[in-house]
Amino acid sequence: MTNIVVTGASGFIASHLVDQLLLKGYNVIGIDSMRTGKKENLSDSMNNDKFQLVIADIRDDDLASHIDSDVDVIYHLAAISSVTLSIEDPRLVNDVNTRGTVNILELARESNTKRVVFSSSAAVYGDPEEMPVHEDFGFNPMSPYAASKIAAEMYIRSYSSAFDIDSTILRYFNVYGPRQAFSEYSGVVSIFTNHALANEPIKIEGDGEQTRSFVHVSDVARATLLAGELNTAIGATINISGPDLISILRLAQLMKENVQGCKSEIVHVAPRLGDVKDSIGSMERAQKLLGFTPSIPLERGLQETSEWYRTHQDTK
Image (cartoon, rainbow, N blue to C red; front, side):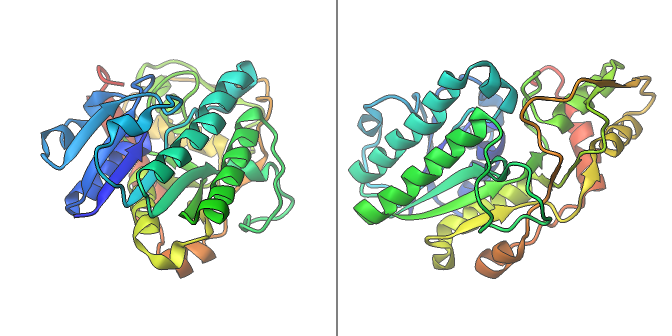
């Protein structure tokens, strides 16, 4: 069986990827510092004899000492993914997202890894003038988080050229779904849902007319898995986006509707520094190279996500 490493394994997206890899029979080594991840996200995987969890920080220079076999594919998802935190602590975000990526690439060299799949972000595009955003649009980082992802992408490309490691870069747009952490640094679906469940004000940064494309975490995990399996993805940079745009104000209204008896008020606060106005990615390349199209409609996914948070309020 193919040996797989997944970084950030106990996190939101990566834990869903681990589940799908194990279902296909792969041997999976998860690496996670447990800084923000939760072992509960791996509750099923921990009972699978094809899974091993290594508690280590991707910034550790001795990562290879935890791996006792060659690795076929590394899925690198570990990162600080908060724009807000990158504004507050740019050095920390650079250290984890950029230096951590270099460490993972060094691990790839030391473990004879054939391919690295890197999870980047739509934040690298900034606030583009045209929609949908195509992968060949230029970089326009509006936050230190975006800059850290661009730097990591450049290291991925350089290692592919210098050390002959196949790679694929995936630029995730707005991912939502079960297991997403709830904090002030979380994604907007998580924040809105949990405030609605608690009958607390749902705070919209700005006028709420900014729009996003949301893609369910199960779809994202499926696309990510394919990127490590298919030769058509080698050397490619690929958007993973939802198919439609929705305003943040409409999203807040849907969140209220999904929580029975919700008494939350929708209130507006100051716009967020580093935020973009609109964001949706072209999915032509994902369809062509991965055969991937999102399968979970937004309204159904939001309802399922609300129900998950309602039943997992002690494990958020």
